[in-house]
Length: 298
Ligand code: BDR
Ligand code: CA
Image (cartoon, rainbow, N blue to C red; front, side, top):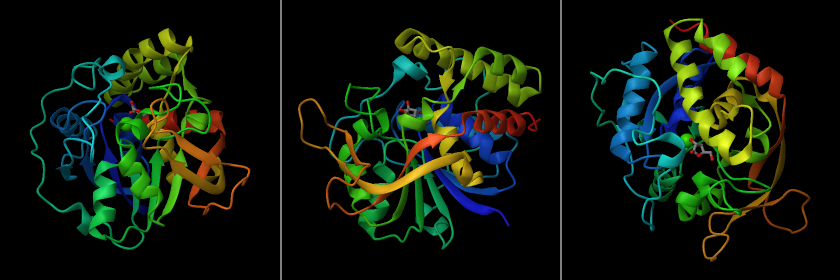
């Protein structure tokens, strides 16, 4: 039986690949997508989500336009990583479907996993409304260094107040952070292999070609971490990740460390164990899964 999921995202190259991975995987059933401002404005991330669903042949899946700005801060986007459109690289046709006016709370029946791959603004709003959420798997945060500041990962940094609300909610929460996503690089060789498989494979290769620029320049990586796809992959196959159940607190009031996810991996404090934090990944199996599944798309 497949696990119903809702993806809350800001596509975004790796968000787009995460959506395609979900569409191509029988272990999960994508009920709907909610967009959030993050990598780009919410208008752009919404258009991108619609484009990706059309590419995957699933324009029937509803897309709800979510928050246009973080709870209490001005929006900070990542055009330096994802381009002006939020999905620079491949030439995707304008979508014909329109955003839905559904209430995503109605999708979150018992057993549904909310996979969040952007800032947690929408998720925090659901928490504030008292909406019951069984489980959240979030790509964001880092035990070690950040990527938007030395201390913070992008999704946590954009809306730390939202992250604090979600981590304080008591909901079953898994954090798939940079410590694991940076261990699995999708290289040019991976892209070239996928480029030959079909239209979706070619688009993913082109997304990776663009995404690669930032990672090559900043880190000297011979590839890109497909961060958000790892959160979906963890739902598809939990054995890909090793996690530690521990306390995580979010810094919201610091000149240098705003958005830092302070992970008490070794239980140095008596803080509540509020998150399952990814500490290791079977990178080869994750990258194989990504290739194998995307290659099945038309
Ligand atoms: C996260 O930030 C975004 O730029 C990516 O889409 C990913 O969700 C990685 O830090
Ligand atoms: Ca994202």
